[in-house]
Length: 336
View 1 (spheres, rainbow, N blue to C red):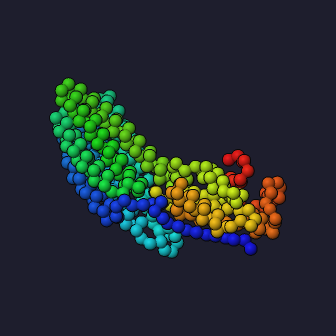
View 2: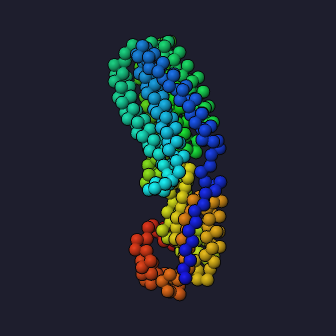
View 3: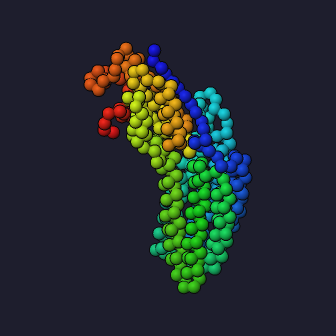
């Protein structure tokens, strides 16, 4: 009889947390409080000083605050047990919020970029002293918020995204402080929209990265840094493994990769031993611990002595699986 082995494992090599969820929550709330209080003051000063750089900084801080709130909500949802139709639970809630945050960043950068170009062409009067003082305070606040977020678990795409955004804000405030100093000492008011364009560029970079990374997870792409063809070649290097197909590698949520595959073993081979060896390789070399492996003897499920490489092999595989997803990997030299 054919042997079908299905195994689901969760070990230390997968999605690990350096601190507890409660500790994450405390650090996120601390960073959120710092950001919101300063952001409200910055909006008031920005309009008083007529500084687009300060207003754009405040807009960026608003997206930071939203991303932290969404991260807190996503963390609460992700802790809910899997039940009903949600067999993975709600772990991808953080990916939804990360993508929403990225799209918001891109939309804000488009609006602020337009406003900055308008002000470059027709610069208004800007109070340099207010810009400089507010930016210097912003640097202090962002250093404190960045430190808080660095204490949380950054394996989460949300937490890492919020950390990178606050770090981006830090760079933006440095640019704004330089602009304020230039306006104060030289009267060159175009320094303000130039600083705004620097902020816009940083927002575009952060937003694009979040949309790209969350999009990869939604499209079930292999995690960054893992080449499915290389993984298949490594797994098929075992002496008893003859063929691997229907190999899928994806991320359930950020930092939690999963793999499934159909493994064909030489007739008489030990399917149980092969499965254990493959799972050990995936855990130790690729940090993939959530695995589903179906292990069969070659040709056994079809009453054949051996699955050959000619027409018979193709026909046999088509009978067993009407739609083979992705390339077939064999122990002989092959093209990807």
